[in-house]
Image (cartoon, rainbow, N blue to C red; front, side, top):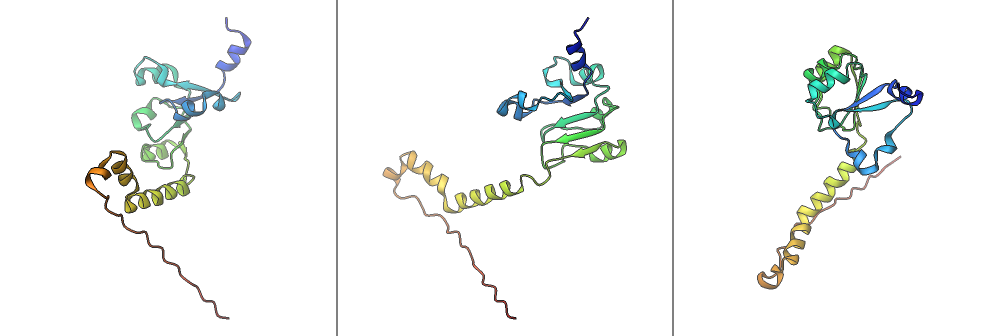
Length: 168
């Protein structure tokens, strides 16, 4: 017979994880535990996914996924009580949205939370490529400067400034 504490944990709602979340590795799983739910970790099972879900996940109401987790009709068929999918990605390409809509499953995503970071990274990479920063660094580190001469200069990044004149 299970202890009252074990029984209480086993009766908590389950949040299904099909793949190991990267955040668990980076920050530690303890930062994501809650007294309100428990994780059902399909990735820890030796069973094929369809068998694991059929045996353990019939009552799962929430699914936490990332961009790497594809969720189609086949998975949804094995989760008849699923009501919400939460994805840590901004995109939703990995989810069968039409099938989720048909089944009344709600979707929550990261939305545009990464937009500014992606824009910063894109500008940084653009400058790196135009100015040949990484390429010239490799050239020098490999000792080519001494034998092959100067590395060709990159292109300049031009910024235009505009003045706005307001007349009243």
